[in-house]
Length: 291
Image 1 (cartoon, rainbow, N blue to C red):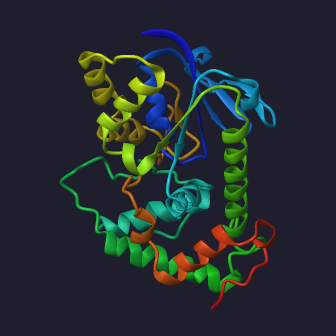
Image 2 (image 1 turned 180 degrees about the vertical axis):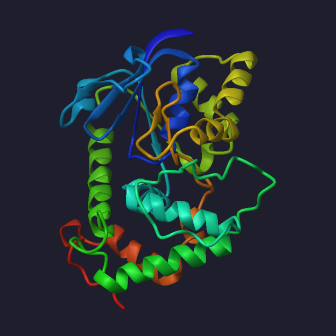
């Protein structure tokens, strides 16, 4: 391994964990950062995640080479919404049961007590019916909008508008880091790297001026592929449960597909989400999202 410190920074839910895992097979110390938190997994123990730095603008204190991951805005926001709190986690869990043809979902209770991950036993013989999932997801989202227009103080633990406001602030932080970070930056696009290790390796080799052996490439592929990570997440109950060695958490991976948000929501709800992602940030909590 190369004795060097590397930083991975991103807006959450943009594929940074995969990139962090890959880099961890090449370099001795790979930090991982979101917003004001920087995790140093070289000092972790098996029972807790250690935060080496936690303050506003923490990443700007660093100057080591930094890899930033980015992803389609709607897919990223929808993924944050999916993972934001135990309530949406429970809803998604039951919608998945419907989509896999299980018995009629129970009344949602959270946190999920019999939670086994988002992939239903990681069994490829079981087919996920995305049309059924979309029907259940979109109908419930529509009902939530009709009840309270996605505003705070309604039935939701955290409203869609509040989640959107947090997301938009993450985007602002990202732009600040891209402008002010003291070291060299490599930006990788989720849509290009999620199913293409050659893209990852070639960018690493060019940016870090290194050569990755075929043996290391094979090791990385075997350890970090989607199936391997799904197996890890199946043993974790809920979004708050983490595997410290891989940084995978319960429900980490859903489909992982590019454009997945358009497969789970109808046109009306997508338009509402889009408005929250493009309006003036000061208007998010109150803007009219239509009928």
